Amino acid sequence: MNEPIAARHWLTLAAPKAAPAVATSTVLILGRIWNANGAEHSVGNAALMVVLAAGAATVGAFASAGRAGDPVIAGAAFATSGALALAGVAGYSDGASLPLLLWAVATATAYGLAARYWRTDRRDALAHDRQMSEQRTEHAHAERVEALRAGAQIESARAGAAYAEQLATALITRATLPGFDPAQLTRAGLPELPTVNTTKEDW
Image (cartoon, rainbow, N blue to C red):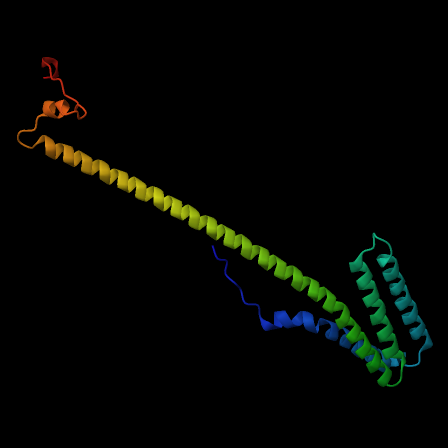
């Protein structure tokens, strides 16, 4: 059976590609809003963001260390650390040049990291599609073979039934011919035809 192929909307396809830029832009905007509300040149706020960013980076380093490291936790921790650092700079600095520069660097880094996961997902999706296509081909071939075998059996049964019907018709027709003598056929070496013994008990 062929499964229906559902066409995905272009927004569904574009959303993952735009996610890194949306994330870094959101952090930049929130940082500039924070700057306009009193975070500019605030040492306390800057120190808080430095501590939080360093803590998130430390968590990421511990999560990625060793063979038992979790890449998901490490990636989330490093992303959080970068977001906090960008928000701190955007909130503390008085101009927009440095925040924009860090936003560009953060966006490029995010796309660089995401591209590796996108390649892996695309490779897995292609392998899955190839495997499903091979399975569908094998199942279709097996179905065709079974259909041919069933058709051959049906045709063989039909041919046998037609032969039996023709043989019975020939025997009945031959028995009704004038001058038909079963004994003469037996003397000629042909198989003896079965005879029906009728007694008085049968009447």
